[in-house]
Length: 310
Figure 1 (cartoon, one colour):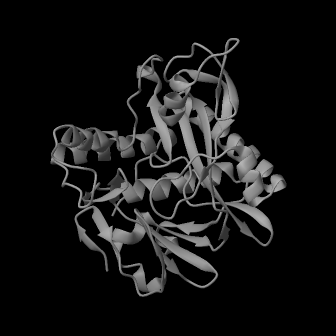
Figure 2 (spheres, rainbow, N blue to C red):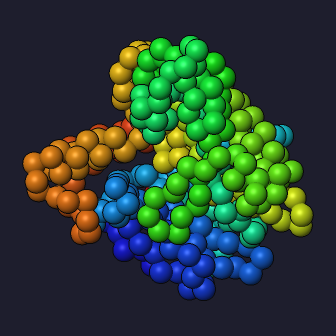
């Protein structure tokens, strides 16, 4: 059963064959299906920290489930059930698992990360600043963007910027042509279309509830020859949420995700107290509480309901 303190699950050891154990999710093999338990583990700078963020796994599970439901008309997804309905009968008495668990179809993952960006931020902003303008345009990652854009400014239209899917370490940006060479042009074009449609639909909904989605990452798999949306969808772990009320181009934006964790750890690095190598430091209580608050706020504002917890 899970190693836990109240409202915190860092690791599970369920009586099923292990499929994978990632930075956040413990996945178990049920044959043609997978059981996914989303823990409260948190990583930063590719290091899983020794402490967790209470309710984080419950937010990620429930927010993905509701987005999967909203976007099923765009593309089928792997979700079969979540919450208590996802659990085998022998585990239904374990309340800590109830709202952080989902049962999904097993697919063949497509080994590309599909990223949609609607705003000039993060690595795209870094690349844009280094590029040399020509004839009023700036070429970045194969896209001609207008010269003179500010940090965090909206792009003329969302763009698709795929990356590799690294088993360890960092994902690396690739061009659409490289993606097409890897998985085939027809499939690459379909994934680009679906990614941009999911992003546009999600951002439209988020704007009605006070958020901008700056960018997002989605993953796909294949089942019976058809594309299926897998993993998570439009969560604070896979997307950058900005509050519309404080959004102002020309600077970096506060994000409703693990930004308090990154800020704290970067401060330790700047002071020479950590070198971004394992083991990571324990987070102070105020950083943990601030991060939980951001995750829960995203869920409850987007969907107008209280988070279900153990």
